[in-house]
Image 1 (cartoon, rainbow, N blue to C red):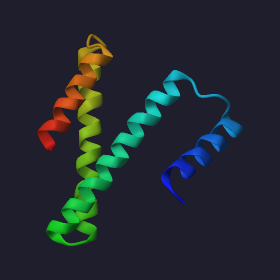
Image 2 (cartoon, one colour):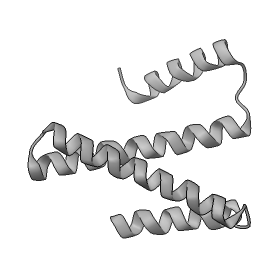
Image 3 (cartoon, rainbow, N blue to C red):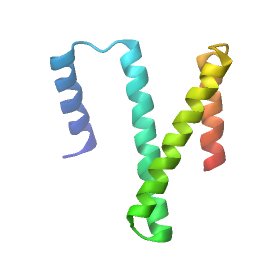
Image 4 (cartoon, rainbow, N blue to C red):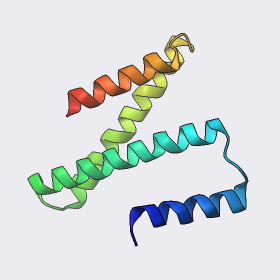
Length: 99
């Protein structure tokens, strides 16, 4: 199966069981997919560097969870003063820096 078929099946099942998605649902699903892609890319790169071990997976997962924690703390400390475009610009800058 290709990716479009899997995405179509997933969206069809999600709409069937949960109804039409709201803007918030799409927003958080996109963020989750982005973190999933980042996690898979990092695991594959580190596995090439250090070999496929449990240590590699645990380091990557811990790093991503710490990044999510830092993002949440940053948002809470700014008390919502930063707009979504500003936050997404920071995320894009961080991704470029990591790349």
